Structure formats: structure tokens, C-alpha cells
Length: 383
Ligand code: COA
View 1 (cartoon, rainbow, N blue to C red):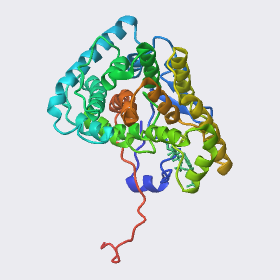
View 2 (view 1 turned 30 degrees about the horizontal axis):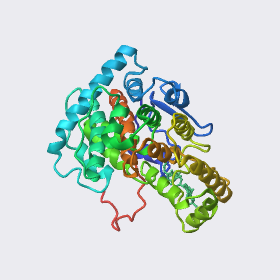
View 3 (view 1 turned 180 degrees about the horizontal axis):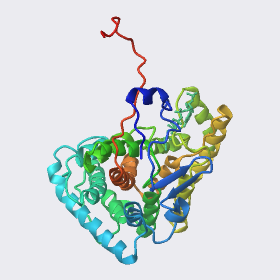
View 4 (view 1 turned 45 degrees about the vertical axis):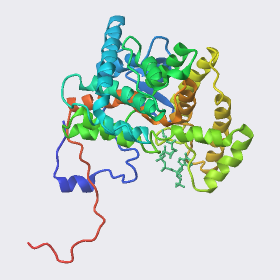
């Protein structure tokens, strides 16, 4: 139980870190653990490599793991897959009622506006949110390409259907591409107290609804320091073009005061373990005959970026984060660059909603304090 003290005493005695809350523990969770020194991510007792690269573990599996605490039985998996498929169909039926929500240049703006249309009540709200995130993101991509949205196929897995809805022209090796996307969705589903998850938990702690929590989390994910990085990673790889250009390009970026996207992390001081998982997913895709023309370049750029950044700041080790190889894997499965951040949301919505449920189960309003450093009134307070 919390020991409650008077507000004034707790503010002055409290551990204070106004510098981005680095190192501050704000919740206990059973969902995932990020070990930044060893480069380890555990999701409900499973190492991320073992989970995401296991044959037969897909997005529905991690949804069950996060929401119910264990990987599903065959039967439970089939039921969840069918329920999610039907929820995609129901989300598709909502498209005509979304007004101008999808008529925007930015997929995350579209998602934020479109998801806000969902009914916020009912026991199936979480599943409806997961389905709608994929269906609305894919519909936005089709509409940007001047095409009408496709109807979901509830018999497919979530990853395969999302791929089909977003880009039906991805062509051959459909199963291998869907497996690579599943590996991505599993890898990105949850990651400790990242900024968007914290946002979702803060909203949930006010006893607000799940739709509000997810819409707020989308807003946090959108920023380039969080989920907005993979698109710029692809832009960087294209601008570099050849491995030999990497050193000069990176030096020029840093000299101009810009950050190297896909590099560095608040928690990891070593390579983000998710980068290795996604790199492996692209290798598998290549082995299945679906060549990524960006993998070799990405590896070369990563090497140069890491050594350049660490020479500049040896005291703050930086390495590739998840976004670096997110760009490579999402490009390799055939998704357009302008859909990368929204695809991150398609995965992370599972984690957000697991955290919302966990927050609700042991809720206390999340309401930190601030230390006032502004001017004081000239007149003393009357006694
Ligand atoms: N490229 C260049 N410099 C970087 C950098 C990067 N990718 N990441 C951090 N730095 C530098 C900062 O400029 C800062 O330098 P300064 O002290 O001279 O100003 C220092 O490292 C610390 O940066 P800070 O923003 O306090 O670190 P953080 O712990 O908040 O960083 C990120 C975490 C992810 C925000 C940061 O590494 C970043 O901006 N990376 C690029 C964006 C990205 O890939 N985001 C996806 C994250 S999964």
C-alpha cells in the first residue's frame, strides 16, 4: 500500500528528475521489461528473439500473451483470429462514416482522427481498436494511392490481411512477407514505459476510456523521437545510396546539428535487441527469395553511424534502435514509407491496451508534481 504524506512534504522530498524523467520508475508492470545495459527485452516471460522468431507465433499470439497472460492454445488462437477478422470487417463498415478523417497527408493524423470516431463503450472496445487501427491505416494508404479501400478477409491472419489491404500489389512470396510482418508486429507490440505507453496509462488513470487512451497514445507515437523515425531512416538510406558515402553523409548531418534517425535510445546502451530480430526477419525473407535491396546498405550505414556517434560521445554509447531495421523490414514486405509509423501503431496498440487494463486493475491517478521556478507575487500572502 502507498504511504500517503502531505502534498507539500512529498514534493520537496521526492526524487526529482525534470530531465525527461530518465531513470524514474512510474509503474509496476507484468507486461514487458527492458534491460538497457544487456540489450534484453522480455515480454511476459519470453525473450523477444525467441518470441518473434518462433514459427507459429504471430500477432494474434502476442495479443493473447499481452492481454491474457499466456500464449494461446491452438483453439484459443483460432477463436481470437476469427474474432479479430470479424472486427476488421466491422471497422471496414465504419469507413463511410469517417467524414474527412482520412483526407490528410499524414497517416498518423488520419489514424488519430479516424480512431476518435469509435464508440468508447462495450466489452469489445479493445479488440475493435486493434482491428480499426489496421483497417483505417490501410484505407488511408489506398486512398493516398487514389484507390478505394478493400474489404478485409476475416479468414486471414491480421498481418497478412493488413498487408493485403494496405498494398495488394506486393506480389509474390505473400506468406513469407506476412511472416516477416508478423515478426515485426510481435517485436513492436510492447516495450516497457515508452512515451506513448506512458501517455495511454496516464489517460487510463483518470478513468477515461480506451479510445481516448489510444488516440492520445497515437499523438505521442507520431513524434520523430518516438515512432516517427523509420520513415526518415529510409530517406537517409536513399540519400546515402552507397556504403562508401555513409561516413561523409553522417558527418555532414551531425555537423548541421541533426540527429541520425534510428540511432540512440533512452534506455539501451547497446544495440536494441529488436534491431537484431528485425534484421533476422529480413534475412529470412531473402532466404525465401524476396530480396531486400536495402539490407546490405543498412548494415554498412549502421556500422559507420555507430562508430561515428560513439567517437563523438564515448560516455553515452549509442547503437541502432528498433526503427533502423523497422525501415528495412517494412520496406521489404512492400509497405510504403508513409505508412511506417502507422504500422508501428498497428502493433503497439496491443501493448497500449494491455497497459490500460493493467493500470485500471490497480489504479491510482497518475499525477506527478512540478517544482515552480517562476516569479513569486510581490505581496506576501495575507495571514
Ligand atoms: N544522433 C545524433 N545525436 C544523438 C542521437 C542521434 N540519433 N541520439 C542522441 N544524440 C545526442 C543528443 O544530440 C544529445 O547530445 P547533446 O547532449 O550534445 O545535446 C545526447 O545524445 C543525448 O540526447 P538525449 O535526447 O538527451 O537522449 P535521449 O536519451 O532522450 O535519446 C532518443 C533517445 C531516441 C530520443 C535519441 O537517441 C534520438 O533522438 N534518436 C533519433 C530518433 C530515433 O531514432 N527515435 C526512435 C527511438 S526508438
